[in-house]
Image (cartoon, rainbow, N blue to C red):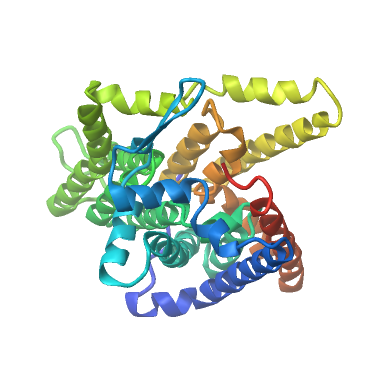
Length: 401
């Protein structure tokens, strides 16, 4: 597997111009999705804006922004849903927007997600362009936009913000900007629990870089030019160490704070998640959930769809390994996928939880980039329409849990 064996980063002055087609395509896809949602909601006498900003997790984030932590709901079965389960960066930004503008906290969440989704699209393009070239970058962004649950990118949720921070952190790793990578990993760790995936990508890649440099040196520490691995000056190594130190501070800081606040020590956050009946069981509960679908018909069709979906995710990851994706991308997408599939509750959320794992889309993006432009445009157009319709149907139905 390659590490940082990628082409040189484009000049900063031309970076936005290079990404412009991808960002324009992304904006068009999301605009079509929002139009479909507003039309569908109007036909059902519902508020599309309420669906985007004031339901499900969006309500919890807005409450944190307005009231701070400490709010909880006790259910009849004894479960306790505490807002300590929600990481603080999005509520902090919602509070900032409300403080400097007439917008409400919910409005601020929508604005942050809107801007973050564009930053995420740019980050996805930057990573794919760095590894496979500009056309693959455009295709990767459009594939991320037309995901069946792509409408979440426009909701007052934390997925867009997290994906933006993760993508740019990974790009910083790919281009050797270790302090930037660590700082963005820190912020990602303040956004969602899966920020651990970004930390893992930074740490594993940095450790491998140190090991390769050590192997490339002779027994007396003198570099052997015949061995693999690039030279690193003391400044580069120091910046790499600093990036490693910064990366885990966000996630670790919040988890330790929750433990202190609850009085349950370093594992206090796990107790908070347990109150939501959420945890990590290696996929056992999800496996049972899928198996139960095959006990009757037509639920067996849903079970078959779930099996196909999981198999597709695993297959895409395996293809990424065969195509020698850079190490940080494989580590990141592997951890995101494992955490999403092996969570013990909220099975309907799994497609949404997988959405930040954008490196899984790179094999498909590469295939589309190599196909004829007309064929690629047709495929993306058809899938885009299907995504817009499904998103409108989904939010007007059960919606994302």
